[in-house]
Length: 131
Image 1 (spheres, rainbow, N blue to C red):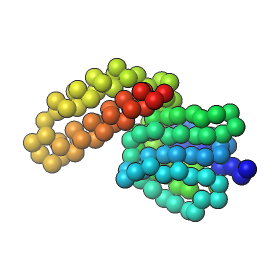
Image 2: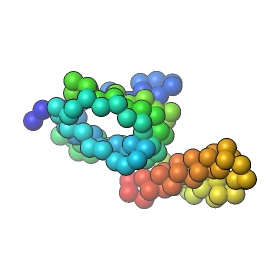
Image 3: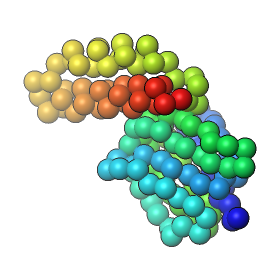
């Protein structure tokens, strides 16, 4: 079976670089699955679960938005944060959600900030429940 090279880069480091069979990741408007020989793509990431499937099983990560590029069997992910699913703290995400819901939203800018923080917290909660 053909494989892909998956590279995840955050502002601090290259947090992941490995060969996988399949990648599923959250775009801002839905989820996409990528296997070998996928057509070239550049996309904007949403908040949610990155799944990497290989012979060793499936690994999951929380992605905090960013961008993805697919070309020549290489999936390059640029994100603000990539956290292994087992390190996602569900209780902290619940607190973050409660705090975000309490933020003011009386201007479009404040509403966008609140909505972003709510989306981030919900994505972490979902991942924590499915980890």
